[in-house]
Amino acid sequence: MITYDTLRRIEQEEKGSAKLVQLPERFLQEVREYMEKKEEITKEKGDKWELSTAKQRFSDIMDIRERKIVSFALSFVRSGSFPASMLPEEKELFEGIAAMIKEHQGRREMAMNGERPALKAVAFLQDIPQFVGIDMGCYGPYSKGDIASVPEANAKVLVEKGAAELAESGS
Image (tube, rainbow, N blue to C red; front, side, top):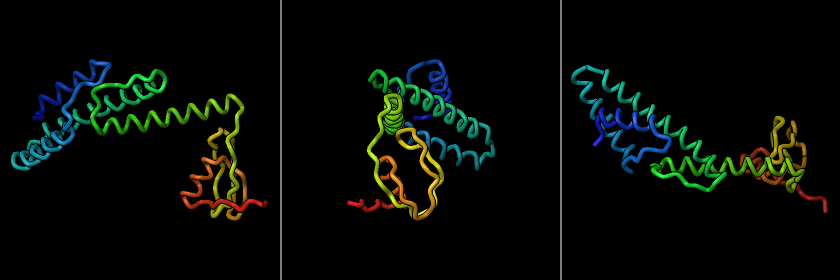
């Protein structure tokens, strides 16, 4: 069961540890239940101090954990070591950040090696400002009706967003 003292203890442990503190798997749900009970008590007694302080402690705990997860994601991409003690919601965040880091590093490698990705011709359905492609090259700006070749991954995003359609090849 979560209490104000529990939140204070967890906050101190998170601040003092380079690793993530082990939390109950239902931690977020337990905190929500605790906050709801505190809201009820606050309505009756009118003392908002403990509720606002508890919310701040919870926010601080999550901020510390998120900073650690970002750092762990970078470390994971470099070394492959998977951190322990993440909540299920944090694992999702971690995996998303790690995937973005891997993708960024792949683009950086391509740019450093002078590799160019496959290009696709697209017809623009709306005006598009200049953007940096997956190959770190600059593309655009484009006006509605323009046809241009852009990296295949960027073409896919433009088509998915409804900003362009694949152009017919002239063969």
